[in-house]
Length: 231
Image (cartoon, rainbow, N blue to C red; front, side, top):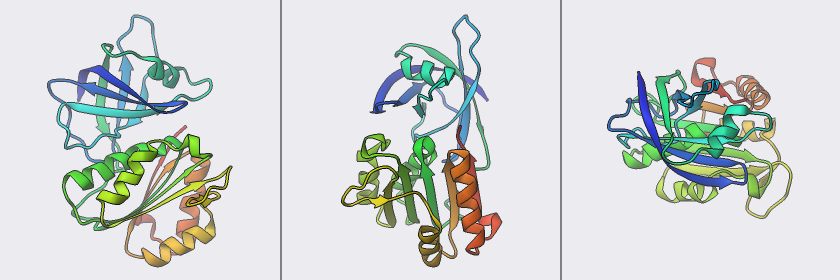
């Protein structure tokens, strides 16, 4: 479904990441975790790009994208510089990377960088629907300054009674934060406590492939793993 939506607000999340709020009288229904194809309506030809919704499907008429400006990335940089009032064509939703509340009473979300976007949608949805989902969220960032939606992640841990939150930093050691990337030792610890969970992985291609391999090696069935590569 294609729909014209207007940018109504931009919110800086970090030094290189913004959340864009798009609104319209209607908005396509979607499942938490799915993505849309966003297209500029400017006269010049700008490539289309896919972005996961970071808003909850419960917010009717509103769609949010959390976009990191990638070095050399034409569209991501243009989106980060876009001003309220600009119109976009939004096509979707697409993808099998989504949370199903009926089928998934227990989930583990493993993300890095802007891969946090679909997990914001999932967590917001769980909170809005007051679900009793048991969830683990592991989010990896380079430094404290690079953590996208830091305050909101802390809020999730307060509002979701069944959530275990782990924020990991790969380039600096800070008290209260795990140090390092997602590795086999971490995966072993998580899988031991979440045997029957569904696993979601989202982030850079190398991180996604490596994490998926570790989950499989630790006995998680392939049909219980959903992955989305960014970049």
